[in-house]
Image 1 (spheres, helix red, strand yellow):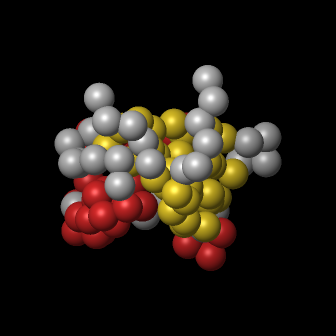
Image 2 (tube, rainbow, N blue to C red):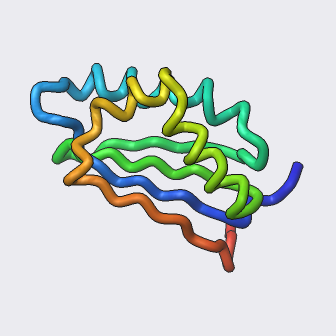
Length: 102
């Protein structure tokens, strides 16, 4: 298996009126999309006490990460999940890994 070289980080809050449980279900459905994308390694999603979500996705390379992001914007299933996100409260970044310790 190839090693991850890119970390994608998305931090957000759900739109008002969407329960944590509904948001969790919607975002988890993105697994079906992301696991099919070239360059995908792994995905972890978490929620904080104040209701912020953190999504960490590991990719083999930046090109694969960016292409997957573009495809996600065209996917009806992804659009459904994204509709739960308050875009004013969202941060989306890619990082190049330089250290990995397990």
